Length: 420
Image (cartoon, rainbow, N blue to C red; front, side, top):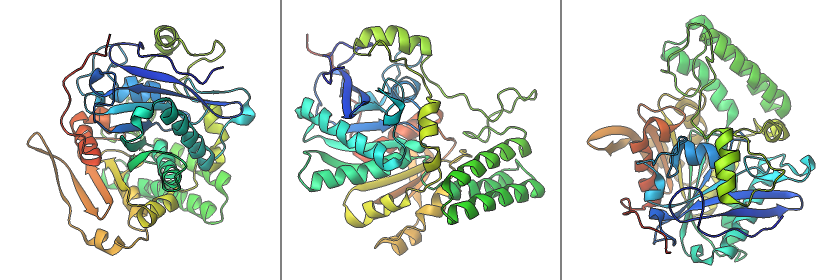
């Protein structure tokens, strides 16, 4: 196995970089960069590092082909790709996810801190190999469980930057529909679903009782038990709502029970990732087979699943000048804004009182109110209208507006062919 990345000829058009960083013995993270505007240089645009959820969901599939990359899962150009505006780096994290791999399962990450340190090691490798990004503003974006990782990663990368250990121009972190505080989210399901008319008072009370059991386990630091109770609460939610789509409360529920409660998330097929993509990239070891979701990675962090990551967010607000952005879709059940604001409003930082009293203002896109935002100091929160858990899929124009707001990247670039 080599740490070296290949040149600019990748899968599809546009300038690309990709390869592996050995972040620990027997642990190898895969990254895939698209240059802004399809050129072969940073083009004066920020670098966005995109992390997926799970843990164990592939950023190179869900994030790249499913949401933000230059091509959709069918290989067609994506008009709303973020590559038109920023340099976009997808990382299959934690190790074992997607094209990332471990030589032995003992090297899998078992907690958020290890996942974060692996990402710091990946960035050290990336910036050494591509020094043209040393001064480029960097923004970490994490969705779902990736938001929990993003908070710790941003804090750890900031410490490396401030100590002079790593030349990186980190500017901010964005956490979208993020599983930052699992207990708060489980507790939010009952009131949210009741207010949306998805359960009656009895169903609400049953969900609240299930959430109370999760809270009791978490309060006594029984995190593995809390995760088991979370799974039971999710199953109960599916039953009392007759299969609500946890990623979009208004999605149709199949009368036959079908795949109710199990949202279909856009991504590349296994055949595509292990066929045409693998051949085009030419760096994937023969023994590595891409999977959109890796249950081994999830299982390795199951005991960590319900542990909150609110402390790193507080430290980001208290100890750094980084821009911290939190958003969630109005129609998301799983990590709805009720649960999100529960933990946000509890954060202890100098402007906490100012933030809680701040008015909400409009997020306008194309003459339409796409959502509302509240901000104070370096914290911004956004409620995204008419979107669920996957904002980039449900409302790409609003997602692009969040990108511009968070990174100040400016309007999309005209496509630039890479140098011949």
